[in-house]
Picture 1: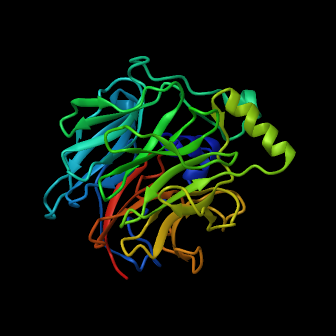
Picture 2: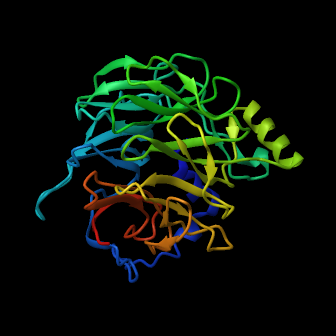
Length: 358
């Protein structure tokens, strides 16, 4: 589950951590040599998981801004500005009720997929009280999340999942034939695939732990994702106890890769702590992700790239707060990501787009 990662990180590490960001902060820092012509697209609130359409012309993302009455994530879509004086004018494409997460474009550019709780309740579902768990970094696994196909005007075309339990974190193969998603339908947070029409659901991971945030490779032959693998008795006990309450503590996640059917799984990183949001770079030979292993205090998050075997890890962003959820345009010429940069010391996370420089 990715939907409230930003807000929970901020609440966990505290407002003072984010205020370490200077008030005159920039949108382009020294050492970010892979970025050029960087541009900020949103201004205020929590904007997360901005992903390109397959033609590279649009972005879809989730947005919360309590000051504007948007109390939990809803899905928004906008055309990427092409001219300096052109503004980014997104529109709401989810129902505006319940909580949503993890939107993604279909290859046809006419439809989107996202998870939502709106059928269970129009209200935002409650968040857990971390004080009851020793102030540990935890988040809820809402069993009312189901996957929906909608058109780009927000009309729901089809409910794709109806099984009891968490169904979310869906992405679609560039081949247009398969959807990969995370579900708790069998009692653990595992990866599943289904045909593009929602049929032929197959479980493709089988190890204890949270498997989530899977992406297909550019040719659709492989998947990459993050996973926890509790191994010692105490960690296993904690994981199972939290999961029984529809909770998870995703603080130790590694990057994994496998064939698209789940066969030949391999762990690519062994960095410990939180390694998040891996996805393939356009050449299919590298991946990009964000993590915190350089910093003992568990913050900030920065973005890195690595070879597809997990080697040659290279830092590509240098904000002092939060750089996350990177995605490349299909042609590899641009990168979009979410960041705390240029937020004036607030908790705001915004969307940035830049030309990619090899």
